[in-house]
Length: 447
Ligand code: C2G
Image 1 (cartoon, rainbow, N blue to C red):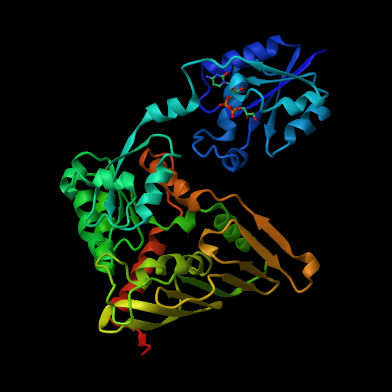
Image 2 (image 1 turned 60 degrees about the vertical axis):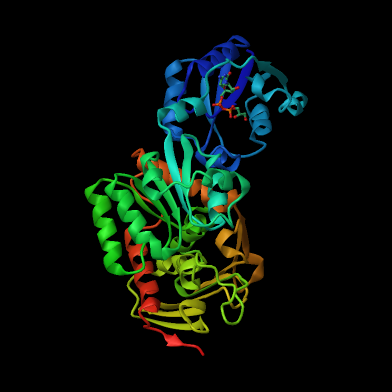
């Protein structure tokens, strides 16, 4: 009996896949089809897969061409499988020509012509193109625009900005059309807002009133009333209003939270996060640019996120201590927040006028988690115990600081595939109210 094996994602199974499977089957008597697990696809850069593993298995099963279906979960598994199942022939489409020649050591390798004119990514992209308009002036807009290229079904419709200084050449050209916000809204299905937080409320409100979905760099608003108004409006209009904190979409961060909730370090008693990035504003604010975000807005949501994710939003007390830029009480150079919860304590430190070690330490009754700087875009963390031989290290590939996964989540919420974002409304609400404390002066002043 000649055993043949082939592998694939088989997202939205189409004619090209079926032709491949038929010809693979004809190479022998028994066909094994390896279907990629979701995590394996993500790890190898295929982030747009829309159907679940079970849906993809069912679709291949229905063709009746596979004698056996297995799951491909890790790099190198093909060698294991060829040995384990005593395979004679490995085959795959010609788009992979040369990539699997190393398997010749274990079995015959045959590349079959790929079917032209059809692909899963085209099917996905044709499903719905979401035109995203960019709003704001910060450098993160360039990162966002570049990350959109990795997400199927998304295009950039234009940009509304008041300063091109921090934008790359491509966005500068786009900005030459000087679109007003109204004009941008007319050519967009959704907005990505990274303007100064003082503008978020008015820009989001206008966009929601015009029926557009929003992904806004946190904080969504600067005071609780404005936040509630926007949330209610989004609900009434059945629109997505998503809080943008890219760390929430990093695989390492998400797995870290799951490990903690599984009790890997026992009960969490203390959480400490630090985020700083020195900027040149001069001792008297002489270089402060109008669109530069104050520190608690720029770093606060990120630094606070893990604390609210792990301990929740019902803290007993929060003490904020802030050092403001001289004669600029609207611009904090450094803020420290100290939380007291029923079951633990937490602190965050954020700074643009103060430099510190950007690490995160989560302390528990059995051990602790150490995330090295820059923890907010990490692909690596350690679980450490009293006996170091029990320490464990985790590494998760992180592409583009998590932004492409954030965009994917936004798109999947718009097309109704996902019903929630990684950041709950309650966490967004709490972030706004913490920031509002600084805005209204409920904080200690560091002179
Ligand atoms: N295919 C094809 N014609 C197409 C599209 C895909 O012949 N128009 C073939 C691919 O070459 C592959 C199989 O169908 O052999 C499944 O394709 P995908 O689902 O796109 O998955 P891919 O990542 O290409 O699978 O490790 C090997 C990879 O998993 C191969």
